[in-house]
Image (cartoon, one colour):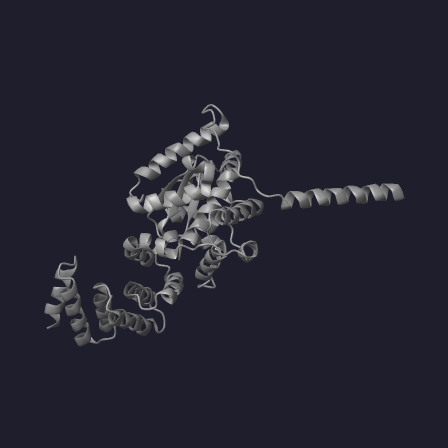
Length: 381
């Protein structure tokens, strides 16, 4: 009896030591993947992804800014190492936070994600996470799994562009990475960031910022409302683990380089964000951006827009304060005056509204709605 107990304890101990050694062994990137035979199951899945990639490339949502695409490709190439020749990155114009990578090497980065990044290291954290899924072949495993469960058509939404966010949030469990797969991708993302000189601490900041946005409305479940979380389950534990993994890192953030790339696009991306209609989340985002650039006219204007359109208690006054601060900055976009006129008009202050409309026309005489504004002014005389 004692001998059997000793053997049982000894085997358990050996298993524990073996498991510990495995857990502590360094991660080694796999060699480049060879394209599978099209007649095989995997080859068929790659062919499907190739067709989806063609659709993405030809889509009106695909962003064709040469400098941006080259910049994204260079980051992916650094992170991918030997796999660089097999990774193709597409920026997609849709105002939600999302990135994905297909088994054939197609990566998508959505413009809502680009808007929310504060520096290149944060962008690299997301791209490295997706590359981690790719290198571990998680996407391929998931596609095989959902095909077996007759959910393949739904899962394809994760890699295509049709339907975009409205359909992606409906994915639920049809294409959700497991906790172990997420842990693998998180761990690999930190390794890739560290290897390429990025400050890996920025990865946890991205996660914390996104959760803060989604929790702006306490009645909202992030799992049901976020495009990203349709396939990447949210967890405070994951944020904390990323912090633990990167606590001693001090690499580069490359903030200036990232801002230079985003600057020509940011106004349009902010317009898309407001059109999304998630004003509580937009205010949290703009609060964060303004904390870094407190007197930026565009950011002040758009936070005013989010507040005005949310139209909650006190929002009109808060919006007007933002508009006025934008004007004082000397960098207010012309549409700031049009929005100020709208607030004045809603408050019954006709004279102030007319003055704001006139300032708008002076700043943008050829605006698409200039004729309509002139008509308002004539009728108000």
